[in-house]
Image 1: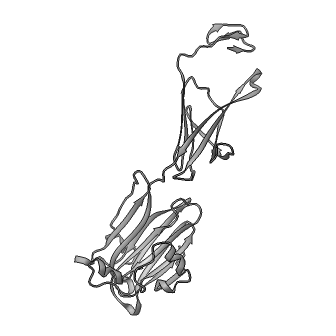
Image 2 (image 1 turned 180 degrees about the vertical axis):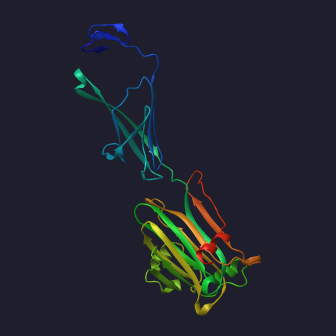
Length: 297
């Protein structure tokens, strides 16, 4: 039933009072992923002027996530970093005008229990190549995207590669980490000498050989370069790799690139990466050669 100051409604003559009938049901669905909440609405559902989304762990105390954006009759909030692998409650509240001269505001809400799975992410990126001297050392670059710091461990692996059939590994690799300006922000030669050696051990990713190098640190979004050299100009096959130690952070490992001398046989360049989480991850893998001439190679 509808009441108000009107003389017709729905094309029918009515004076101040009318009975409304819906030919379709009010349809809705509230869905959540780690990064996005969507409230899908249809049928005879009311149209909202605005929608807010909130989250809770106990269905009593709620925290505002933000206001949704309308796409037709649906409302979406993106750019979230919801906790994964635990039950949470998502509440959507829609507001629409009502009452005399639209002087009041009414609310419709929907609550659902959600269990967000971690999205597919690059969890590890690595390259194996033959490390020489001068311009032919191994140079690995990676980009951290998103917001907030990213806790990572970068490793230079050499001697332990004999366990995987490599007969000429780099016997004593060193590792330098540079920021986007080219400045050295960290250096390691032998991971056991690192000031945060225990933290490296606790990460579960300590190198198996004491002559190998590792840097565990937190980095802000930006471009970084890891350079692997041999002590006393040593040469041999080495592996440079980076691991994401905090996949739930707002920042992500977004790219890795490695420059090294690609040879033949066992000395070709081999890149590896691990995708963690659930679902598919869309990536592009490139092999660049001739165009490096414009950069002085």
